[in-house]
Length: 338
Image (cartoon, rainbow, N blue to C red; front, side, top):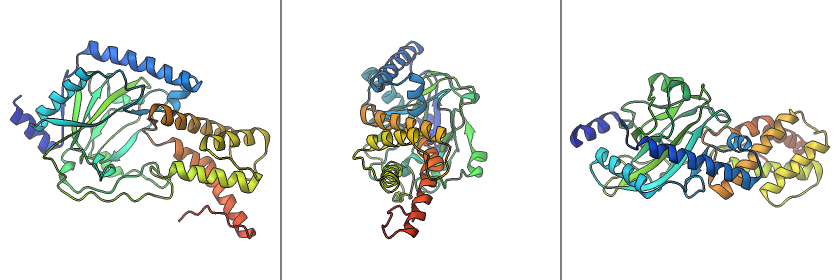
């Protein structure tokens, strides 16, 4: 296919698939290296690989997990990207994301451009590191949706978030093979389904921009919710600290110390509000691993389920309890759901 036709198809639909961009032997070596590096990461945190992969599903470069990526592989992706946009692309960011038996949830539909209003990028190149059949939760796109408005960032970490069923009906699954690349405009609505076959489904996602490109619309400012993508870490720390202080008269300085203090409380005490303590312990363990992985490996939660789960089973009941204390006490409890 000619450069003109490739560029035309991408502009019209907002996405395009190019087969066999990266040879399979390179993909296989990269998978082996990533697996070894994830094992090293789990060993550094002194947790099992299963626990690590139950908590971490994204690694943004620079990271130990992304360290095996060679300049030649990125050059190949750059050349393929240039075929799409017809100009020399600049690498803006790259990361590895995964779904597997431990992290299998869907990623709701969103537009990438909405999350980076200060430094927007033009398109993404989604390189499959494993075969991604329909059952594995492949990328899903809404064709031509990049031609519409740029919407505010979708905060699917928020407990209040409800997926839009209309978007799902409009979407098209894109099953591809290892080594294939899906290119898509940063304004395109996309997401991915649940990994139903539980097999590993890793992808290298690179972000690209060209010098002369600019968004054709104003990108809405990010408006953080009370608890969500931009606030869940700080709000969790705040609520855990207030609960520890007002219920048990204890103080801890760091986030990690707070989580460990609550693990000790749950082992030794009966809480004054009702929760499933076993599930809370599991959730706190995952949050602790996620926090350490973020600090040491630039790791994250691609699906946004860990903090949302912690909120629903522990932080929300504790917030309500603390607010009851506030009504009965002259000492003001700072947790507010405004």
